[in-house]
Image 1 (cartoon, helix red, strand yellow):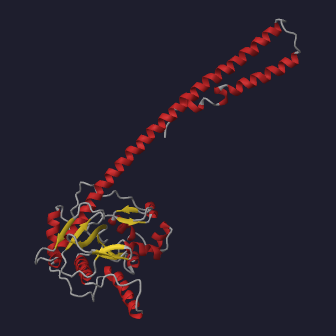
Image 2 (cartoon, helix red, strand yellow; image 1 turned 135 degrees about the horizontal axis):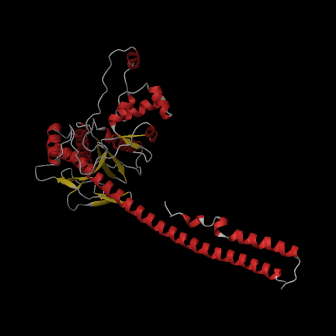
Image 3 (cartoon, one colour; image 1 turned 30 degrees about the vertical axis):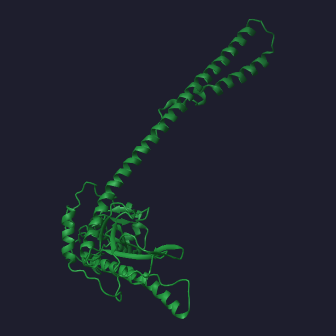
Length: 387
């Protein structure tokens, strides 16, 4: 989801998509009709079929408005769309962290979800080769093939294949089988290579879950391209453990490992079902974390608001004090002008009347200039501060 995207209810988006011809709807959003249709397709929203609006105008019977598909494990239950849709659709609140989470495809109880997914996945075997890989491994395998091709052309290259040893190939086959099992339930998986290591994850609906396959216990290592890695000559029978790492942070992990004759290869369906459950569990947890984060932000904003109000009130009080001082100065000037005028009238000072008149005008104008009421300075503290 992009920062500027908004969340809307899928049914609201469907109702919008079927409310008018695509060109008219696109104009409301300042988009092209092609761009709008692509956006709706990305959200899984089908547009009215060709001829639909001609039938409407002719008064003919048309298809009923489709319903949004039920929420799948790990899905938000919301459609993420361009912020411009806020002009035509209400923004949807996220699901509540306390549920309910159930849909036609997701039971409320996670143990029930595991049993449901395990049954639906059925048998999941590990192919002996990677001749027909899952799309999530294609990038790694192509990169490996390029390295092999370079090595075939030259006697030596720095960039040798990283996963041509038996144990690494076994890890790739296990990942491949797991991704294929997840794809049976409409989920995705993928892996990439970085610094000679395989980094993998699964996309369960809208939720990403980390995956890792490592060697059980201590093992020999070798320095490869500046990094310590498992020695490449270890046999494929070396015990392995597969770990689900929901947050990619090695917290709340679930793991399986080779145990005698019970190899990881025999537990792919069970692991795939657990990955799906982990995705749904992480999604539910993320809702609570989002609510807690929003509450912390609300408290912090309120704290900042109160601090700012304190500062504004201190400023208001200072302005009030300034008004008092300015008023006293203005009144002192006026009183002084009046005293001079009386003194001259009583003959105690012999001053040219025109000079006195000019002075009075100037002095009283200065008094008016600093008078907080006449100058408007009183407005700086007249109203209670607000944000």
